[in-house]
Amino acid sequence: MKISGHVQAIINAAYNEAKVRNHEYLTPEHILYAALAFDEVQGILAACGANLNQLKHGHGMWGGVLIITVWIRHLCPRSA
Image (cartoon, rainbow, N blue to C red; front, side, top):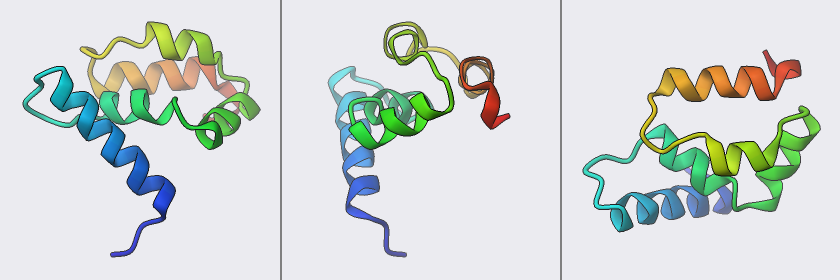
């Protein structure tokens, strides 16, 4: 399966983030955290009304997928 260069860059950054933190698994939290460093992702989330600062500094790397889902729905209500 082919993926875009942007998606590959996000996956690579997420993998590196997990590795630097000595985490055994790559999780959705790592992907979200890594994706927030990319202008395209920031633009999409901002267009939804998301609070990027709160996402960058408050989502917590140790929460589960449910926490990320709840935060996205709360911070980006037009996407729910």
